[in-house]
Image 1 (cartoon, one colour):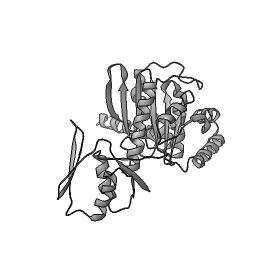
Image 2 (image 1 turned 180 degrees about the vertical axis):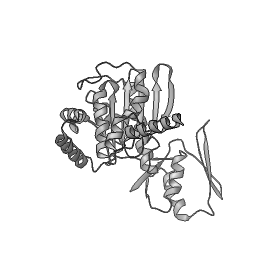
Image 3 (image 1 turned 90 degrees about the vertical axis):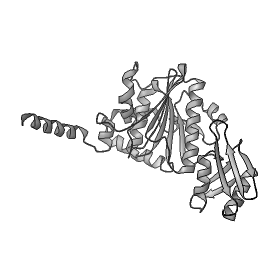
Image 4 (image 1 turned 135 degrees about the vertical axis):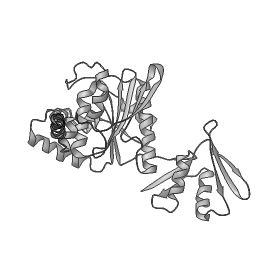
Length: 304
């Protein structure tokens, strides 16, 4: 896989006969000095292409890829993202895809029901028909096989659908990212079914703080403000860029929370919880049985 880089807009370049000095930022400034005499000619030629305003494309296995990744992580260069083919960016049906697609070029936002029908959402949540569930598993495992990641934006009032998406992603073992809005609050998280907690693990920690109505109604609707929508999309856009360059997402397993009225922000981790039936069931983790054994052990200690 190759990544295309361009220089950052506010990059300052100072030259001497022996050094090339790159600077960026004012208060949070970064500076790096490159030795012209001891640096490889090929690397310097590629860097000069960037400084002159041209794009360069570097394969991940290129000898100098790590050097350009370092320049990227310090902000001296950025990634020139085109439409990314290995991600699917879905939004709940009440969210405008036109606004997002006009503002962002790295992904093409599409309605959730164009890929995952309301009927399948109900079937996933009901979990009463094993044959139907197996059909859904095979259907979406094949439909999403070409995507490395799924992105999904929704209002938290669509809780029924969010839970279904969460369960489906765990069923097919597909890493995914959620952007969720609720009345001037937004939550953003990355979930890897094999490593992190799922949405319901996260839900156990925060949902008790909120008063939801009709949680189990499959046809609920919500609204997302421009501010909520574009902040979520901007952070996820940056995540797409960073994941392409670094090969991993720094958002995976973490939860970002923003409260707009006073601009409060917090950061948390999303770990698996023994209270999560979805993780326990779909990952064959017998939390309940393990817990019972622990209780029995404690009882034995009490008797000693």
